Amino acid sequence: MQFHIKNMTCGGCARSVTKAIQSVDAQAKVTIDPNTRKVDVASQRPRADFEAALQRAGYPAAA
Image 1: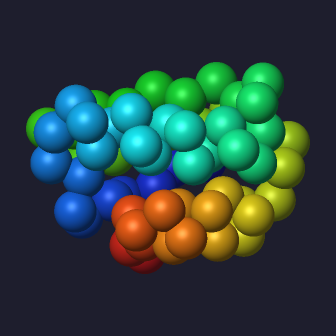
Image 2 (image 1 turned 180 degrees about the vertical axis):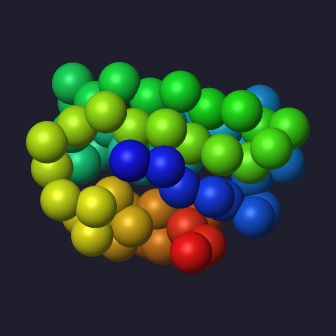
C-alpha cells in the first residue's frame, strides 16, 4: 500500500514515519522517498491501522 505524507520533508521525518509504521507491524517492509513524500508499506495489517499511527505521530497520510 502507498501513502503520501505531505509534511515529510527530510530524513528525520522519514525516520519518524518508519517508526510509526513499525509500531503497527514491526515486520512491515517500508520504502520511503522523502523527495516525492511517498511511502510504500508491505504488510498484511489493515491500511486504517497505519493511517491512525501516522496521524498520532503527526504525519497524516493524504488521499
